[in-house]
Amino acid sequence: MPTYGKNWTDRGVIAADYILAMANIGSGIAIFGTHDEHIFRSVNYGSTWVDLGDITEAGIYSMAYLGNGIVIAGDALKHVFRSTNYGLNWSDLGEIASGAIYSMASLGGGITVLGDIAKHVYRSINYGANWTDLGVVSSGYGNCMAYLGGGVTILGDSSFHIYRSVDYGAIWSDLGTFGFVPIYSMAYLGNNTAIFGTDEHIWRSTNSGLNWADLGAITTGRIWAMAHLNKGTVVVGDEWGHIFRSIDYGATWKDLGVIATLDIFSMAYLDKGVTILGDYNGHVFRSTMKGPLPIHFR
Image (cartoon, rainbow, N blue to C red; front, top):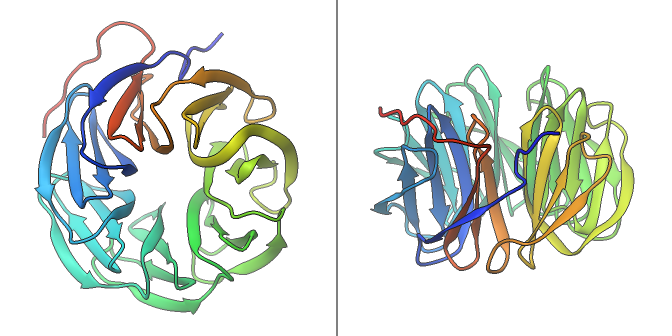
């Protein structure tokens, strides 16, 4: 029986504000961004963290690792920040979006998309160095994105819609509304299976986001964050600090209880059985398989 994401340890208060976004950069390196504009970095699979300081001038809502040591972050003032050395140093690319940047996704090969609260989608084909405005794509805030492989990308918005692209984010189709509450989080689980979270409910697709089934009320609160860990094992976090876990590609779920101190806003899987999450009160929680993990530096 897999144990990914089953047991969690509180690493304590790491940040002074909400931890809103996380990204795995590989080789044990991880970063997260906070509501009070800081970026933190770990080089030992989330065991300890270094505050890189006040990077932006507004909350950091989204992050994505693009490969080749390049990572980007989006803030509430429409700016994109970019690092080319595994999150150690950052450059402000300026005001890229039309509103706060709530979502980002790397589609491979240097292609990246982001969604903002002004309903626009922006696309980069050179590892986030330059961006093209695709115009108004969604009917509400572009809350979350996920890449499903093979050029297929999905976007969930605050107006209950799912949008889908099959050409690496160049053109988008509206699949319609799903439920009557905003879509807050989504993840790809492999095997053409994806999930998204709303208020209490999880929806699931087994055909690369084309059709969706409502699995019903899994939690009693908003599902802010989720992460695919390994071979169909996935965890989601809600506004009450609960973690729910599935080991069958999201088909069924078990409540692991209250893990965090309050809202779980972000999650990331760091490889080698290690998963991290960030909550409302600046805590980082960490789940491991067993035994110590190697530390890699860049």
